[in-house]
Image (cartoon, rainbow, N blue to C red; front, side):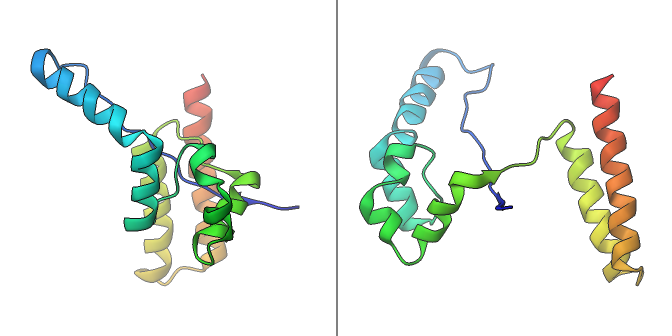
Length: 125
């Protein structure tokens, strides 16, 4: 089984933006989501482009640093957040139980899995 983790986010425009601020936000969003900006962002920041056409160019895939990450996107998945703050806190608490309290890592992971499942189950109701 091949698996890889990928984290995705999106830039957006707040619902309260109006007038000149809305126009500026739309112009900015259009630029940052352009192929040109995504390629710059990759080279300067190291963030993988969201557009496949930008990410999977021959040069990018052949790059010794970015290439393996780009190839791994073919079988990557991401966390399905239903309560991002709650789910992140579950992960933080899991690590803290081990690092601060000295708890057994497997026991802490098992507890986190129960908490995570409870969050997911509550959201499904």
